[in-house]
Length: 587
Image 1 (cartoon, rainbow, N blue to C red):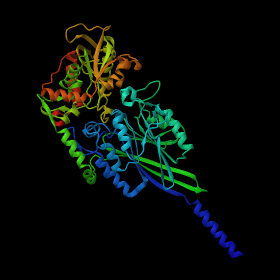
Image 2 (image 1 turned 180 degrees about the vertical axis):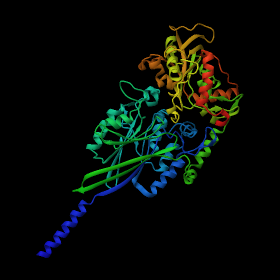
Image 3 (image 1 turned 120 degrees about the vertical axis):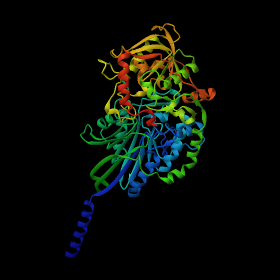
Image 4 (image 1 turned 30 degrees about the horizontal axis):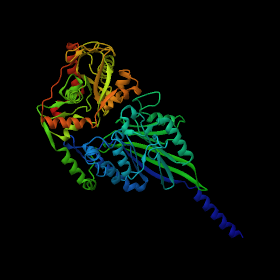
């Protein structure tokens, strides 16, 4: 009997010891975001090798997979269907081929992906096919199908890894209607992110009983468009205000970010953004420890840390390149086709300092194509050029970066002036002396891929053609622009209606120059549109160059900064700050 009791006690101690021993699981999470077609280590636009790319991300991912196996989760945060000609070729030139973005995601073995605003910009035919071809879950909890009232794609994905239940919740910035023609997102609506996050996190905690909750948001850190209904960039707000997230991986604003913040319950939330163009990845380590009791976890502890890893100069994965060699050859054949010649080189860097051949070439096309009275246009690439001599399809992606349509919008003279006032107020400082800056600069934004030294977003710096005007840099905001006359010599009248041509991003309210600037209510914009092109702006630019053959762009000299004696010297100083290297050294 004593021996039996001893054996039982030993067995019981063994069981208790086993039960008390904590279980530990180590996980890794890698995120890419805003890849913008940078799949291969070659810039098809500028015809030169390219840093980063998914070919190098593949090398990084493989090195981690060798250690972690299926305990690595690979996530992408959208804006993958636009950027390099690779995407344009797959989306629009040869749409019957497997979508190259889907093929890359599948080859690399991504576990989940969200949709970005530039993915929606491609239109239903493209992104519906892309969603169908991607083998991993496509997430978008706040993208609602109006017909069903339910998410258009999966709201979240669940992954079970060695007893750890991980939930990944996808959200998209709801500002889509402020940028894109409704036809592109017909049948959809985009819910405000914070409320959607609260609903789904509650579901993930109560119904799914997730151990780890990761936010995968195509929305920036903060800022952007703010309305009574939503915030464009709400990632950090959600991390703070919606308890339950262990990690928020975001994108959209192309800005590297990595910090741990406290939510309203005082708990840590790791927040990271890997910038853009597959130059970096977010890499997070998660260690989960718990005790198991009657099939339930007790004393669950989580240790989470992360870093932004630079992959710019990693070795290219050769198997990846070999797999996509036929696609690369097809894109090269497409972009290398000659379409005409340019008499002189034109530079987007000139657009900030006065009339320039680069922006006026686009103004001319817009006015010629539509017969509008006035044209608005902004530099869409920070610092690019079209070289003198032969021009190829690849050059068109420098001349016009996005797949925007052309719109003609009815505006009063007063609205036109106010639109330009807001544009120049974002672009130009108020000078108090001849030694002041003329440009609104910000040293902190030099590494921001959308500002690069300017305080504000350069693709919202609209100038105009069809009118003669001055921008007085000594005047306060709202009083800088003085319109003198129409360029044909007729008077410009503030109470007269004019047809104004612009890109569809601007015409739908992008940059808020029409709404906050001109004062047109957003719901009225649709009724103001009197023309919209069937194809994208780049298509018509290419068509015009091919038809004409030999192009000699001229700047209009229809506007200037005044007083000129202040502006001239200030421009020289600020141009040297923004562009410290002569243009020939840049290329």
